[in-house]
Image (cartoon, rainbow, N blue to C red; front, side):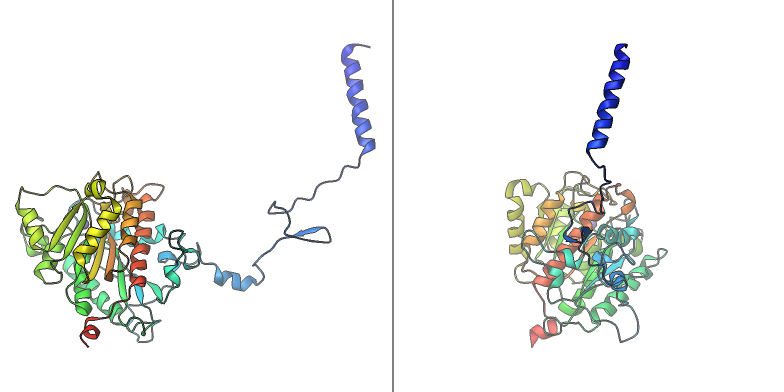
Length: 396
Ligand SMILES: [Mn+2]
C-alpha cells in the first residue's frame, strides 16, 4: 500500500468513528442573534414593544413621516384659521438667498437643517452634561415649516417673512401661565432675514441686545456694501445690522462673537460698528480668554436686557461648516460654539436664528447641517430655561 492510500484510509476511518459516536443536530439560530431574554419550551422569545402593530406606526419618532425639525410636530402656524394647535416656541424656516454677496444657496438652508436634525427627538434628548431635557419642560415646541418667500423680489420676500413673523408670534401661547408670547427660532436663509426677525421682536419686547455670532461684522454701510446703487441693493446680508440700528431695533449693549473677516477700510467700518452698538470679540480672543472668558464677556455686555441671538454658521471654521456662502478660515470649532451658547443660560432670549446654511457646499458627512441643528437645539434650550414676559406685562 502506498503512503497516499494509507493516509486516505486513516481519514475515512476517523470520519466513520466520529459519525457513529455522536448525533449531529442542526443548531437553532434565532434573530437577532442574541442570548434569549426569556425561554419558553426551549424556544427563544425576544422582548418586543411591537405588540400593537397599528400603534407602532404612530409612535415611531425618527426617520418616519415628513421631516420636521428634530421630529417636532408640524403646525400650520400661518393658517388664517383661529383654531390652530397652540405652542410656546416655534421653528420657522426662511428659505431666502437673494441678498447674498458671496455664494448663494441658503434658500435650501431650512431643509438642510431639518435633515441635519433627523436623529434628534424629544424622547432621546437627555443631556450628558446637565442630565436635563429641554424638549420635555413646560414649553410646547413645534415646527411651523417654511415661509413662502419669492426668489424674484427681495422687498416682497422680506415683507412675506415679516407678515409670517407677526402671525406666528401673535398667536396665543400654550403655557400661558409661564409665557404669553410664542418665541421664534428662524432657520435661515441668508442673514438679511435677521432684520425681519428683529422687527418682530421689537413688536413685543422693544429694542434688544443682539449677540451676533459671525465671522463678519454685518454692520457695513449700505451706501458702500452692495455698491450704493439703490436702497434695494443696500439691504443685504452684510448691512442688515446697520439698518437694524438705524431703525432703532437694537440696543447699544450688543456684541459680535467670532469676528475675523477684514474690513473695507482702516477706521470707518470699526467706528461705524461701534456706533451701531457693538463690541467685538474676535475669533482669536478665545485663545487668550477661553470659552468661559467669552461667555463672561457676553453676559457682562448684555446685562439684564432682552437678547436676540443670531448665529451665522460661518462663525465656525470651514472645517466644521463648509456649507455656507462666505466662509472664512480660522474660526471656532463646533464644540466651542455649543459650549459658549449653552453657557449663556439665564439670558432673556426673546428671539434667535441660525442662518447662512447653504447645504449645496456641505460634504457627504453633512458636517454643516449637523452643526446647525445642534446650534438650533441649544438656542431652544436657552429659551426654555428663561421664560420672558412681553413688554406690556413688564410695565404693569
Ligand atoms: Mn452674517
